[in-house]
Amino acid sequence: MRLEPSDEQRQILDSVDRFMARQLPPAETRRRDREQDPPYHLLRSMGDAGFIAAPFSESVGGLGQSWTTVVLIQERMASLGLMAASLFTRTVTFGGMSLMSYGSEAQKHALMPALIRGELLFAFALTEPGAGTDAAAIETRAERHDGGWRLNGRKSWISDADRADYIIMPCRTGPRDGGKHGISMFLVPRRSAGLHMSALPKAGHNCMPSWDVGVDEVLLPDDALMGELGAGMRHMQSTLHYARAGQAASAVGQAQAAVNLALEHAKTRRQFGQALGSFQVIAHMLADMQTRVDLARLMLYQLASLIDADLPCRKESAQAKLTAAEAFHFIADRGMQILASAGYSLDSDMQRYWRDSRLYMFGEGPVELQRNLIAREMGL
Image 1 (cartoon, rainbow, N blue to C red):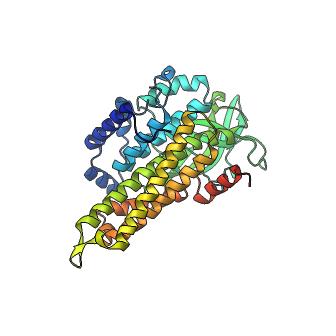
Image 2: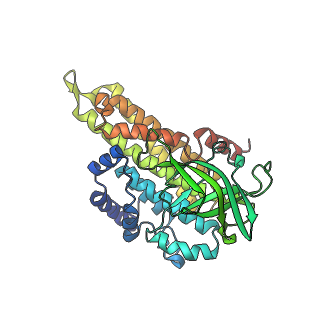
Image 3: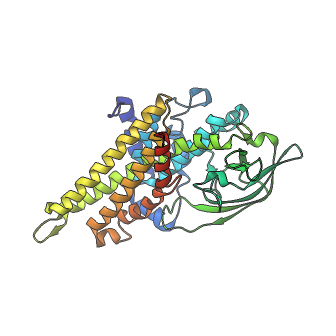
């Protein structure tokens, strides 16, 4: 497992730095967060820069880069502006990796080139009012109808649903009491008749809008099915496998940015005639913060190396998500304590890290579920 970027990866990271300085400087990030104005226009620019192409094979127009390279891009983008990293990650994982993992050849051929160019946005509609962590409780149904499919149900907390070109939607195709069996994946055009959306206000991630999605007699052709009929749980795990790596990378990037901000404040803020960081209690806080982010980064890079080697990594995926989420939450909380009123100000980046860090504790699988998955992989 390589811990230092290669020369090629350093060049890519330099291009990420230039991209972010030009497209999403800190002042623009703060403005968009304050005004809840997502930078969807960046998607095309990311395509032009070649970032979206990174993990995909040359056969579909990609660059064939390693997943380690993707993680480095995600981490660096997140440290400079989460809203860009989040948009990049959702496109690569929810859209691209879902298509590549279980999309039909026709679906890949039709959609991957445009996705790589940054022309398509995808949403992943797993969560329902009664299903989330318990994905097997999905109730939205897909039934055969006139040679195609008819969908009915409701999805909730779906990111980008109103702007996505396509929504990847798990639906129950088997018996209602089938549990994890009898769930299938569908590719649903966002403009399909029968989709109704309502915005869901929330405390953080202001540039990742969430939506309640009503699914009322939505008709789809037969070829809207993704992957095998009834294999939806397996397919979802494939998508979440990559999505959790992306979440861990985003959390690590933001956690390091929060440490850097708190460290700078501790060096420049003076109290009782000395720098704040000269007090041992503050120094120890910062030492714990940096140690936690370094440990989370090691878990993340281990996961990326296993993905690159095409080795089993269910345990490591859960561990990376768990350690990164808890590290970011811990660091943002301690950062707020160190900055005090300066961090509580809406002009501070620390309050945004603090608000945004909470989502990682439950989004795409809460930390409690990650511990269950780890224990299961240990044979418990």
